[in-house]
Image (cartoon, rainbow, N blue to C red; front, side, top):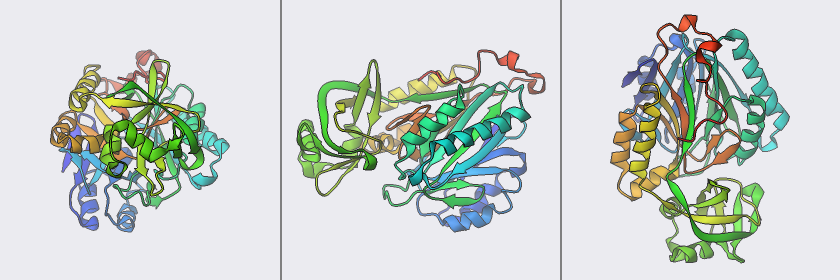
Length: 401
């Protein structure tokens, strides 16, 4: 199934057999017309088969992607599918690269990569005013905080948006894709330049409550919390919720997240699972002494519709590339709203994937809907200069709509 959303192409296949699925996707698109092809690969697919199918494609365009905890395409939420988005060469210049061996992460190498990619797209299209960066990283590397910080430093005023690759709910191994190769322990960065308006966004439907707790024993390097309020973390979290510790599940964590509040802002620190010894494993970095607040959900469906409507009210209907935390999808399933959210995602033309975490500028967060909204081009893109788009380019202070 292929769709043309104004100026951006998307394609997908629900075929369970990988060779047929990737052939179906590639058969729906003209790779030679793309500056970038992004692939989101659902759980259970043969990555080697996809690599083989991409051999002729990487000579025609740049290809990036990742494995997922779920996909988003025509029809909304998908499972076990392959979804693609193609950015046209006529309106985008793209430079891509990757950082491997993330467990020995070098901030200097990350900054050098960002500088190099920015220079490449700026040199080729200096008069195209809008620049953004899109990041895909190994969702089990535990390095997203360091990645986001180092890359954002080098990107200057250009927004950084990204997502952590997934592996369904298995949490076994996640992969990112660059130029026909799937890699683990790796992050892929794409810097995009375009004359079209782009909005970087991040939002969540959560509100902090006054229920506070303090992390009193933690292993930040492994994102583990051993104790809360001086008590074993899992049982204490369950006590605060009024639940039996044996009842803790991914649905519990999705419905009862914790946040770190700084001034008027809050960052969601989502719990991945409870370990056999009662330790809580988080999706993001956490440290001893941190004060957490229990958060409560507002209406997920109403909030999503409101925020997508705001995006669509700016300059016509955009094509939306989204990184949607898996915990949001789990909450939708648990509250029996998955079909209604799928209808919303379909109506607003969202393409993307369910993540193990999201990156927005300097921070790595969870339980958000984060992404890029690409707006239709002006009629005469060939004559556009930076002055034509003064004040319209995406910025680091992009509105959290």
